[in-house]
Length: 159
Ligand SMILES: Cc1cc2nc3c(=O)[nH]c(=O)nc-3n(C[C@H](O)[C@H](O)[C@H](O)COP(=O)(O)O)c2cc1C
Image (tube, rainbow, N blue to C red; front, side):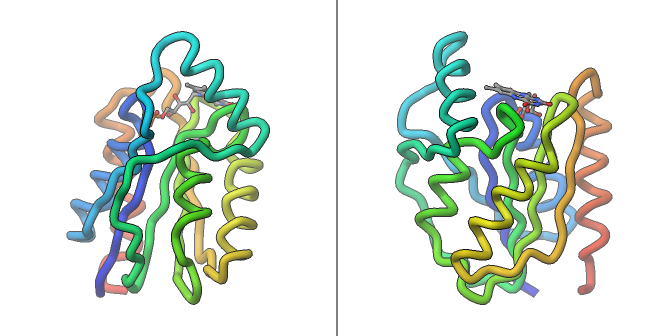
């Protein structure tokens, strides 16, 4: 089974989860990169506001092909919403008849509304959400975050 992991990550936590899932499933992995580098503090603040208004942003050109049996799509939660970068990816890619598993990382809260917004947007584009996962990263050691990603991946091994 061909599996793809696509993710956006600003500070590396979502990346840990994405890499763990890809490792366990021997999946292809792609990082969504913003066209403009976000700097502390203004890039973070403006990003939070853009996320809260469900905006997209400019992302670097990337492979948008989703010709896989299963697609994991991951983002941090910003202001209880998905990030502008993941919004931009969802608006560009063709999800018709694609099986999608959403994963989000967050300090502590906001996963449910972020997952709902992503699910709605993907379903509007013809995709099918088959599951979703939320991983808390606030005060959690990187090894534990990575392990949670491995646990998610293991659930889809040999499926
Ligand atoms: C602009 C911004 C907004 C955030 N908003 C939330 C939030 O609403 N709820 C939350 O629990 N964490 C929030 N966080 C924390 C991140 O979701 C969390 O640290 C995440 O795991 C970071 O993922 P990353 O390292 O892949 O970028 C926010 C972080 C940033 C930079």
